[in-house]
Image (cartoon, rainbow, N blue to C red; front, side, top):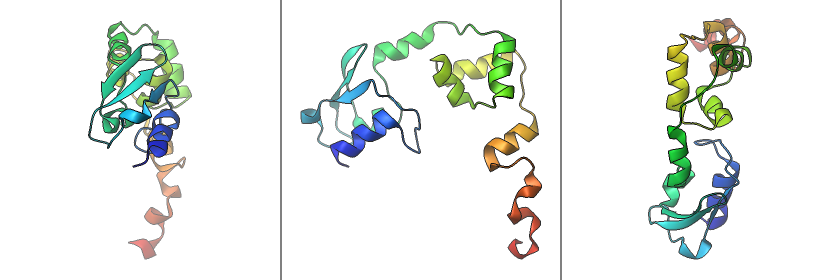
Length: 142
C-alpha cells in the first residue's frame, strides 16, 4: 500500500473504519510496510510508534486512548435523543461523545435503552419496513 493511500484512509476514513482522523499524520520516511512499526504524529499528543495497519484500523496515540478512562456523563434523555430519535450507531455515538464504544454500550445498558426493530431495519437494510426488500417479496429470488 502506498503512503498516500494509507494517509488518506487514516485522515478521511474508509469502509472498515469510517471515522476521519485528520489530526493524525505519518512520518513518511519511517514507513516501510503495513505490519512494520512506523512513527505517527498526533497534533495534540505528539509522536508515537505503531504499526500502520493498526492505526488504519482505529489505533490512536496512547494518551488519547487513556482519555477514554474518564466517566461518560450523559443523561438518559440526551442519550435517548441521539440513539433513538437521531438513530445514531454506537460507533457514531462514541465518536460524537469522544469515548470508547464500550462506554456507550454501558450507558445504553444502564439506562435500558433498546432500539425498536423499526429503527434497526432502517439502519441495517436502508428501508422503513423489511417488506420493502425485493429479495424478501419477489418469489423469483427464493
